[in-house]
Image (cartoon, rainbow over all chains, first blue to last red; front, side):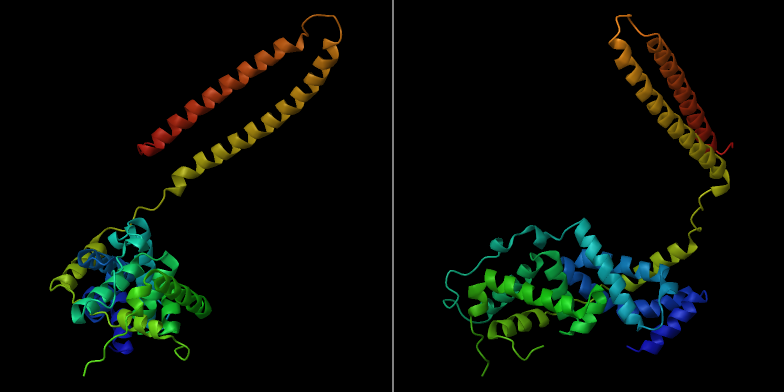
Length: 189
Length: 132
């Protein structure tokens, strides 16, 4: 994905060439849908939210100041939209409490891949039940390949605040899922 | 950032960063572009009719100011009257004549308020129906 492609497409759209927006959609549809999915855990809703994000980007293209990369602006816009959408209609996983995420009776009793998948799913669902500020920090941090500055830019927060929220979010996860996170992962031979 | 991480933190990192990607459905880009074209073809939003609304807003503002001033004057007058009434109640002279005057002034104010309400409702209905 090239920043110059984005810039030239934006300039064409602003000059009235509306079909040029399709280049932007095709380049960024995957990331925007995946980010939305991490917020709502519902594929259909993720696509609706991503579509709305593209529409808002289209309406606000003129507001993109070229001092930041286009993708930074697009992710910040999408993140804002997803956060407010989730505040308006919470995802199903958020209606669960952290106590509803089942802990195994004995984490060491079962074996192999199925248990790993179970644990991964439980941890991801547990993220959805965290208070919004910790949940959003964790989602953005892992979505951006554990890059704090990028996550902070998307959230519009100082890096220090994001780091503090990541720390606290992980603490809550560890407190609520002690057994699942205590299981040592077996290295494949 | 990762120098002091604990094993369970590493586990959280592994689980949350290793999440699989979902692919957009085949018609997603087309559907977004349809929505964008509809957006582009839609007429621009109707601007607020400031020219029409301005006389009403000015009149409303003036009326509000007049009512506020009149209210303050009425409160001040009421304060003076109350002091006089307290003083006159000490005298065995029956009902003070100013009492009747207050009912009259209240009736006048009520009548004015009703007329103002009627005028503002009529004016706004006329403006809304586009006949203004």
